Structures are given as structure tokens and as C-alpha cells.
View 1 (cartoon, rainbow, N blue to C red):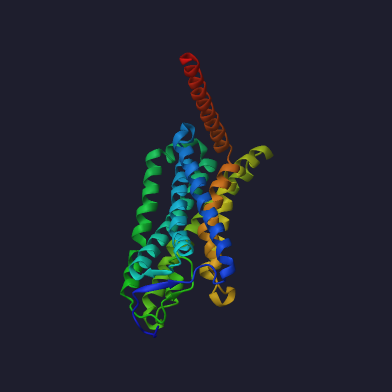
View 2: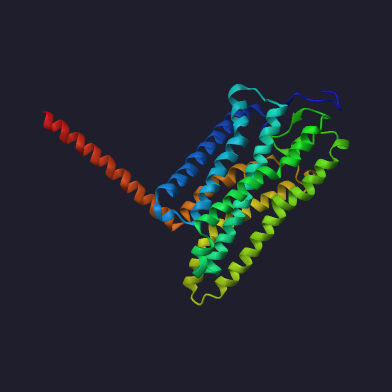
Length: 325
């Protein structure tokens, strides 16, 4: 393709160009995708079915499960399609729509995690007012804000990107539709406004402000935990925040490596993108299930109910057959 030309489609390079790695990568990506869907769907159903999980913490965790499934589907859909059909072309409009959806979904995840840190702050620092402050109506308003604001927030960027028609190449060295690899294909002279939006308003709302709010919440949380007199009480209070803290640490570490550090320092950032968009979604249901006693109790109760229903159904069929004979 000649420089300074418009494009009608992009060519995705995917995760690897090595033919020997195509089959193992496909199996790995498919396994991860199915695990993310099953794990998050199971967690979401458990939260919906078990009444004692109808609290603010699990309400936001349910939102996080939906976001994880959406994020994984948006990022891995084209990768799996490329392995099956061999078609690595993405129409220009399709690329822009998928990029917009991906950015919005990741922004929702960041805001939901930030809201969950506030929820943990209220639970530990103001336990007597917890049910009043984090009422169901307040939780609905906070979740609605996360979703609506995230989809509205990226409209200026997608509008500016749509107006850029000058590209040096139509080859995207990535495995999903993202902004950074797209900007690398655009003519430098046409990127000023888009870079300005990305490096200022984008980073502030997307990373810096949520990070500072999360850190502030945990400063107050740690101070409150240290004031607890018994070691058992401190350990229990910290344990309730541990899963959320681990997820945030992984998320912001990969954000820093992916978006803050220049590409010439780390080279290809596809592995960081894979970790940020897929592995974090994979770890969420695992961390919140293994490290959460309420989830484990609800899961065991649901298994016992399903097992009992199966045995009752089988027993009924046996009685019916014996009566007929």
C-alpha cells in the first residue's frame, strides 16, 4: 500500500506469524475464551439465584462478570475467526466499531472496580452506615453511571479518528481492534488532536483518576484495618479486600506497561494486551470464587440442590416404571 492513502480494510497480523504456533495458539485461545464465558456466567447465575448474595458487593461483581465476557468476546472473536477461516481482513467501519466497543467496555471495568473499592471502604470504615450508603438504589445509580459515562466518554475520540483518512499502511500488528496499533498506521501530521485526546483526557479518565480514587480508598481501608485490635479481625477485614486488591494490582500494572512505557522500550506489547484483556477476565471468577467464603457456600448449596433434584427425578422415574410393571 502507498503512503498517504485511504483504506477500506485493515489486515490483522494476529498473535504470531509462525505457522507451527497457529494450532497451539488456537487451542489455548479457545480454551481461555470458553473458560472465561463459563466461569463468569456461572458466577453471574450464582449471584442471581442465591438471595444472600444480593448485596452491593456482589451486585458490582455481577456487572464485572458481564464486562469480562463482553471484553473477551470483542478481543478474541477475530482471533478465533482468523484461525478457522484464514481471513485476516477487517473492514474499516468494523474496526472502528470494535475499537469503540472495546474501549468503552474496558472503561466500564475500570469504573466498576473503582466503585467496588469505594464499596469496600464503606464496608470497613463505616460499617454501621453501610446498608444506608450502599443501598440498592445507590448501587443501581453508580452502575448506570459506569456504563453510560463509559460509552459517552469515547465518542469524541471515535469522531476524531473517523475524520482521519491518511494512512501509511493498512497492516495492523495486533490481534484485536485497538487504538494504539491503529495510530501507528496513521500519518503523523493527522494525529495531533487524537494524540491530545488520548494522552490527556483519555489517560486522566481512563487510568489516572480511577487509580488515585482506588489508592485513596485503600489508604483509608488500611488505616481502619490497622486500628482493629485483634489479629483475627485484621486478617478477616483484609481478606475481604484481597481479591479486589489483586485484580486492581494486575490491571494497573499492565496498563502502565501497555500505555505509559514507550514501545521502543518494551518492543511488542501484544502479550501485555493479551494479559490485560483476557487473563484478567480469566482470573476474576477464579479469585472471587476461591477467596470468597460466601461464593463457596452458595456454590456448594446450589450443587446440593441440583444433585437432590436429579436424585428425586431418577427416583420418581424408577417408581413410575415399577408401578407400570
